[in-house]
Amino acid sequence: LGRMRTGEAAHVFIETQVREDSFKLYGFASDQERAWFARLQDVGGVGARVALAILDVLSPQDLLEALALGDAASIARASGVGPKLAARIIVELKGKAPPAPLFGVAIAPVNSASANTTAPEPAPDEGNHAARSEAVSALINLGIGQSEALRAVAAAARGLDRDAPLSALVKAALKEAAPKDTRV
Image 1 (tube, rainbow, N blue to C red):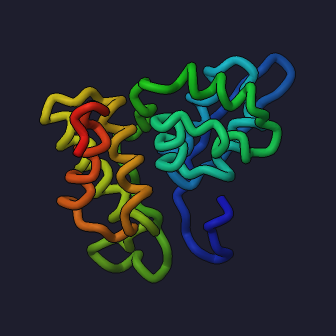
Image 2: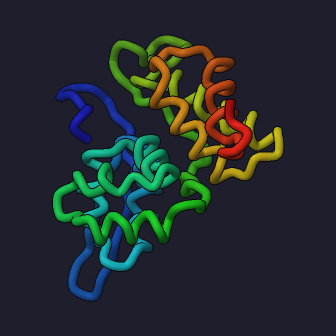
């Protein structure tokens, strides 16, 4: 919620946790963050505090890439997450489909500058996320499994500029997905 500014309208996505002795509300800037918050808590040893710490250092896209690449060091950067817990998170979540947002699509944030326009202001890195999603879809359509496609696109994206064209991302991802003995 650190991206919110005083005086601006905002959509907040709430995750509610009811316990015998408490009633807690957690607010998120996107439904995707809220969905990852819930998914992370499916892992043994990960509670609300650790899930929030992970989402504080990794965006949902970065978390998905860390899982696809088996990058425990990125996850372990979060406060309260050691190497063993980071490894457990990867083992339990790697290869699983990303959590589905409750609303099915991301809702663009509302701010006073864009409230009266027809096109919402794009979120930072939105174009990059769209290119990655399209590249994963392209690889899946070529017969590559979802988890391998996610891993290949994440690895390829790390080696390219953030504004690289989709064709370059797909080409690099195909090289990443190629069997090791056939790479040129």
